[in-house]
Image (cartoon, rainbow, N blue to C red; front, side, top):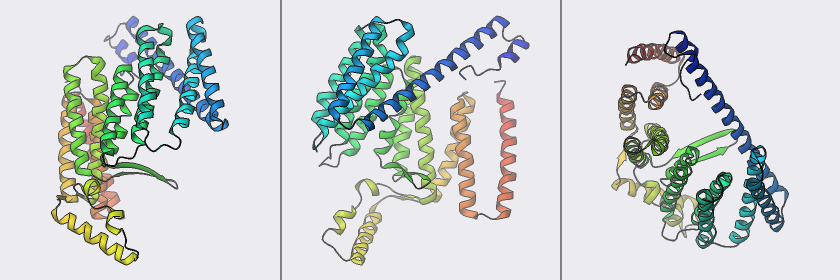
Length: 395
């Protein structure tokens, strides 16, 4: 997957020597096998942790089991050979997670202010993991990285699960995203970096949810989310151009994910428009309806408060979102193609199709004729993309 080239064709036409082709295939296979092994290992570790936590209800027993597994795994990593390293890493990671989870559960129970616990447990764990990666034998590097992530998770959880009296939950979420980015860059694991998008998006009221056989995404602040993610994308572009490849690949990951979320925000805005700030600093149901027991009066009070807020707020119509989204897709897609950024081009093409079909059926409604015309236009668009790609390929 990493070697995006038809090796056999390249060897056949003389672009690659047969020896180079064999080496590329060997590396591609090694990368794929390594990915499969790591994926299976990670899935197994997660399942064992989840099963053990559900099976052992006694937290003291769970903590004792975790400490024992972590100790055995660590000892095996230090004294054992490479053949047992994979299993030893799994045992140590499972043990450290069970022990930390049981300890956090005990200390969090009954507390509303959990910041102190998050600091007292999380920061020392981060320091221990960092020390293991820097000074301990290299066989403990993976375990040290995992302990760093556990410490960061506990630290952030202590902050996020503490109710803010100042309404600053969004600041805590931005901080959580920053911690995830820092951990991902330090450990050089782009998956960890990518998880930063969850709290960063949630900071502006973006949510995901699940109902019966239904998954959903809600972006309540479309305009502000577009501004936020655009800034992240611009910073990521600057970092990818001005820093070494080690930092640039993390920046590209964040930039591509932010570009996806920008399009999601435009999608929502193109359907419903946006009242800027309504869900961040607009009226609150509990505050507006406090002391009112008649349901009809409560609804009337809420509608009056909402109308008063919207009268002084910036309101952006769905049509404006639809137009700006189309222009943005064209501009970003052209830039991605001309600079050989395939991921950017793929995102633009994907959301270009989504945008077209959404607006087509939203404004013209679904009829048999509309479906036929949409299909014909899609075929023409595919032909145009093919023609453009043929012209760009030599460049």
